[in-house]
Image (cartoon, rainbow over all chains, first blue to last red; front, side, top):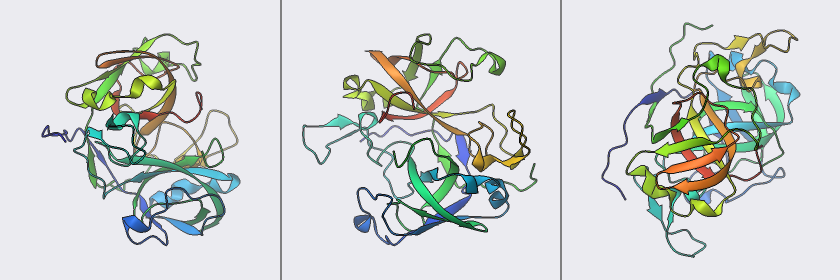
Length: 138
Length: 138
């Protein structure tokens, strides 16, 4: 843990959120494949206008803000053992700037809602960005 | 372009910056492979402590803040033609929250500096996060 204060050097705006079956962190699965439950990515106006053209992609990358994650840890003890590790050498959600990138399969677009599979995030997690994916569920 | 104001819903702290040969946006190459020039990823204290264990990885993902990118565009005309597209259906640096993720090869660690190849960002671009990479230069 560090007492150092992370600066507020830039601000993020939430452009929407995700809707998933996982209502608490402990319910969130570690990894969900393309056969996982249908979830929704909901964009707030006017950001939904920027979806134009998204329908052609099979995979999309979601950028999420892990609003429940601690930001003050530098070294943690991962579950897999092998001793303490710096958070930058782990893909843990615990990090100074808790931005998550996850690739999901795009099932359908319904206006400002994208129906996707392969998402393991907490219901209500804020959405920062989305992009066409480069590789399946990487 | 939109007049809508993107909220300031969360704040980001810069944990360091990158050092590259590219001093202006027009000098930044579109794509640099693992044979590109050596660049440095410099971490500010105390965040450099969270690098512990990074040396074992061949590829790392850098999360950068594209501080020069416009944030007020929803639809743009990509260079490849084919008409206007929503920014979320493109991997353009122009987006409401201009977070870039790029995979680089890790050559060496020198204290709070990582020497890497495969980086095409502007010199001085702020660093938000880094993680072990999952696939080579994806």
